[in-house]
Image 1 (cartoon, rainbow, N blue to C red):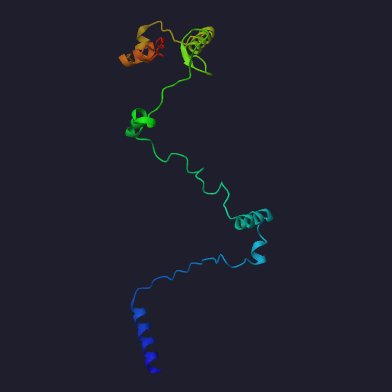
Image 2: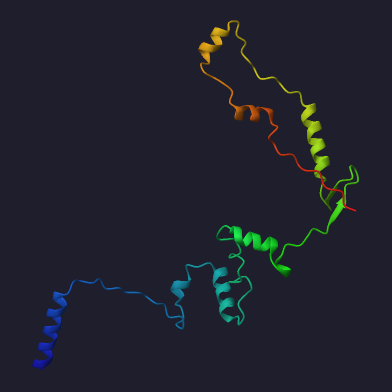
Length: 179
């Protein structure tokens, strides 16, 4: 008896010397234990019915963990992967378009069931030309000295000149004739 008391006192002293570590209690629910009626009363009866159906079913329904939500790309596709897809071997390579037709209006090649880009461009140009453009208000100075005082050192740079001319815009290339 005295021996067991001495061991307990030694254990208490050793525990008292060590730094205090918080006790961690994790409640693990018992899945085999039936739930009491009090805990299920707060839930919607439709949810309870669904839970019972899922527990009774041998095969889980298809919408649980089938990867539908995991289909979004996580990261940007690298340059190497893009090139592999474009110039990869065999079936990994992107296939050529087989659904090309001629436009009945202008004769250019286009994808089937889509609009011809040449005709769309012509319609767009026609609409832009038909809308009257209002000229921007420009203040006219009688004296050029007034303009220099109001806008000192304003000079047009070569980049601004090219932006104003809009010649730097790339035009859609015409399709090559295919026979």
